[in-house]
Length: 402
Image 1 (cartoon, rainbow, N blue to C red):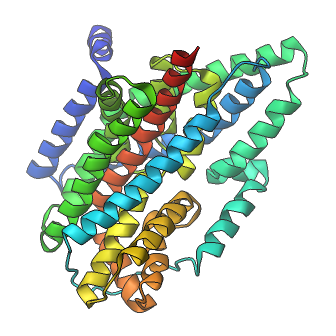
Image 2 (image 1 turned 90 degrees about the vertical axis):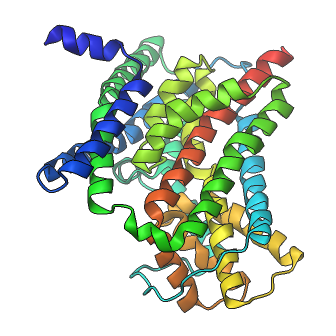
């Protein structure tokens, strides 16, 4: 048994995940009711990632700042600029795609029992108050803005601490990362459970009426992932971007696709950044920040669904209004993680700009929930993998300039 486990662990994690996906799909097709208990494997895996991620971010950021040597560049500013550029570019491309391929919606779905934010001010209000949340509450609720704020403050406060204290924090950081490795090692089993549950309970029939919308959304996100992001990487590094982009999509995007949570994927991204030998002072901060503000996929979702609603209702959208929509989508997307329901609940903001009533906007939100298995999976895969792509891009650019 020990030999089998050792041989299994010697196989590439990505290959093991693919095996888990295939087994989960087969079992869901042949015995969905008899093996319904397998769904718990996926729930346990996602919850384990969500549990360890806040502690990981808190400890890593404190350690990175406390042990940082003055004068050593981190590249955080460069990463943040890349996050903003990519999110705005995604919103712009989504608007152009919506003009080129107008989509009709079936607006008869009942609105979900959810409360969208009343305006961009509420989104920003939520973000600001998340920063000053009690640290224990922030860790318990997975509030990464609050976690980052307290970790940064503690990190600076501990810069003057005794070397023994810093060594203890470093050892604690190493221990947490070891736990993360154990959890990620269970990814094939967890994703097997997620795939089984998704296929067994949802199937594919519910997507037939929204085929064109799904194609537009997914194609736009793929265009961002394979064309726009590589173009940004090439402009910054002047090197072939695809080895980096494909690595991040393979080792970060796949797990993010199935967990559908940028927060849950933070441990995966941290491990990938370490594997790419990036500057720990940079990725310890940029990865959790990216899970909060780097939202290219959310910008695509907000833009495409809002423009689809306008087209369905015959609302004429001029180019200037579309550009304003793109900016609103990008800004709102950065606040998506701070609003219950994520990017879908920010659609009424964009619809309001186009003169679409809240009743109709909430029907669009309901449609988003129907196709959420695909839309949210692709959105999270794009968002999360991009965090590592742009962190690595900034790191490589700094090395080239030395």
